[in-house]
Length: 109
Length: 405
Image (tube, rainbow over all chains, first blue to last red; front, side, top):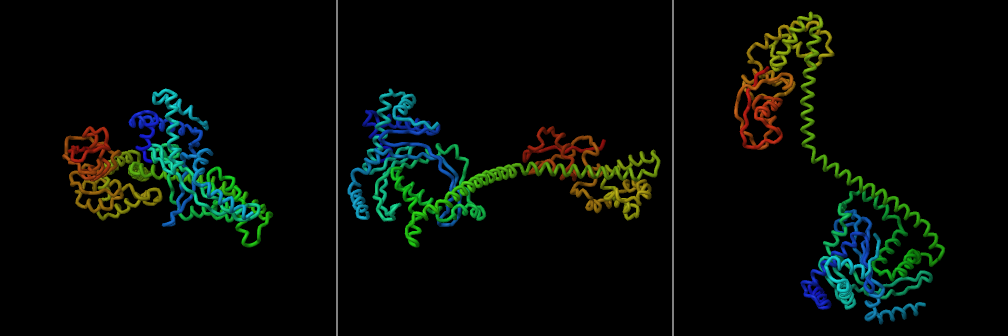
């Protein structure tokens, strides 16, 4: 789903024109950015937490050339899905797999 | 800071920003994230401009080993949602850290860092732990954490079965290594900052190098003049020792005229006295013997000065100030080969018009017109230049003819 499809869907659900929905979505993203820049996080029930995390500096090696680099620390937005969303994700398809897994462990035990 | 904003709080902010009613805003925000969630559940990725992409990823089944019993079991595959921020969003969020750049490490630096990586067994488990943490969702953390302890055991497994004691033995050095790692990290950070400082200093040095270089040269020139003058006055004093005060005064006046034509001074052609005279000029303080004999040569000085400047050019070449000689003889007669501040000049009319070439400086013009760099201030003054550093290529400037005061 690309940005355009997303906006038309959003417009449909809120009874807005797609252009309007685009403007509103931009406003929402601005609001979210403001929240992140203050160091706060977004917590949405049934969806997850969107927060800014500090990633430490690390050394990486370019596998092709073998050149070693020190990657600087950075701030990045990270998404942590809520348990509910995870459950929804895995409720349909992975039931059989879960069963397999439990069977396996039972056998091992 | 560190607040957790929920749906209604976001809606409030949103309402303030977009002018929607709060209820509408809440509905809008809710639907915004609902669409994402629904698509994620359906296995589709959602790309939102200015924010990023939410993607559903399938994680494959994988085998692991139980902590306590050492038996194998399968961690079932599952789906997870990934969020990949937009480039724009990334940049904006990372603004506080945007000054940092990826450094390419030299071998020596890398060796220091390598120490962290090469700390052995427990380090590997640490790595695998991190990897697990990334791959598994937070829900799987407990599983991953148990594995964390398991892995070292599995490594030993091949050699000496499973022994709970060995696990605890391994824990000791691990803690030490972690603290060591922390220390190295602090040192690393310091090193990084020092590197940044060095870089900044380098850039500054490069930026101000031409300026500083010019200043240095100017200072050197001035110093040369000074020492030259000092040497000369010392000479005069030494010379005047045995002579009466009146004679000293006379000589002072004479040597003054000599300094005006300092290139003329060594002219005295093939006379013994002259050779003697030039020696104390270079080492005035170390030559007590010639001092007594000196008065005569000095007294004879004016004579050679009045001689025509036929042999002058040869002497110019050996001139210790190393002046460039391109000016005509009549210009030399002005006595332009002395330091500019020992003699003052009057500007009497225009001597020539000089067209400024690209990249030419006032000192270069002075050198070309007078044969010495030192007279550029007169050119600047004659042309009423306020800023002697800005000279337009192609413009014509007037060269004053100078007459000593």
